[in-house]
Image (spheres, rainbow, N blue to C red):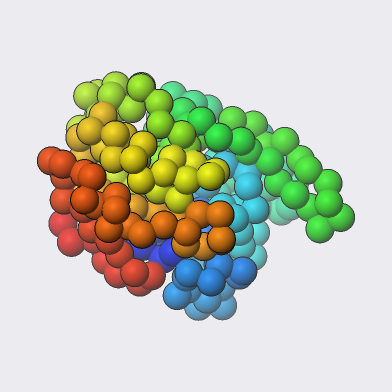
Length: 226
């Protein structure tokens, strides 16, 4: 299995000949190395409905009829766009061809803004737990710090965690470091920073605050070293 980071909250997982993209915000993302025309995922996983996370989902999914897995309301709306979807609820777990996926809670918003400036509610935001090839991966999505992260880490020992550090819209470095203490992952990768002016951060500040985890500060295209 190969796990790589691609700017903002975009994560790619390649496993058993299949490609998974999480929150594929590509066009308009100055931090990514990906190009929509070069990507053809088998699965797309979404944490919530904000435009900088839904990103290029529809265009990517149509390439090879990828399955989009997302919180129920978001999945329903995307199905109306002609995309094959599977909706899930917070706390729910489901088996897929690539492995098992569970949605966790996240404290954030979830809406999609259309080109004509309409805001569409997309249900609850989520984090994602993945159980693939014996490895547990946690993508926190966009979230504030919350105490039940302790339960997530205790109930599902985490090998690799992706946590936002950008502040303003999500946790900042200090709260994200506290989240790592709650989650107790073996490896943690900071995400969701430096894409826009309000979320500019120095990830080394976060790294210096973290104890008892291997912090890997990745550039777009870098792979997680397991």
